[in-house]
Image 1 (cartoon, rainbow, N blue to C red):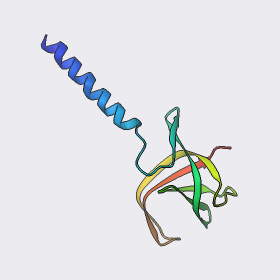
Image 2 (tube, rainbow, N blue to C red):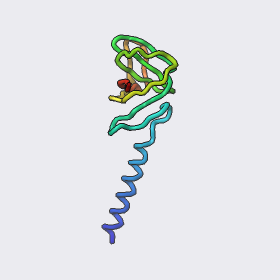
Image 3 (spheres, one colour):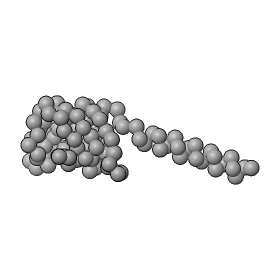
Length: 106
């Protein structure tokens, strides 16, 4: 009996953690998943070109991509590659709370 209760308790904890993991972080324009990678989409509200990266703001989130002729005001889709917290860019003299490195989905 105890083993069954512990098993059910463990399942409920796992389910709660899985549910938390699927909720996109606050401030993202739109996020879904392809396999284990997140897809972000939204309208570019700000762009900063500093080779080799193009920094894009979509909603409240900043992304860094290798230059793809992307202009302000267009809707794009990005495939998340990695993310860094408190990333400081020497070129921009700016700290990003979270910076997502991504590639464009065409």
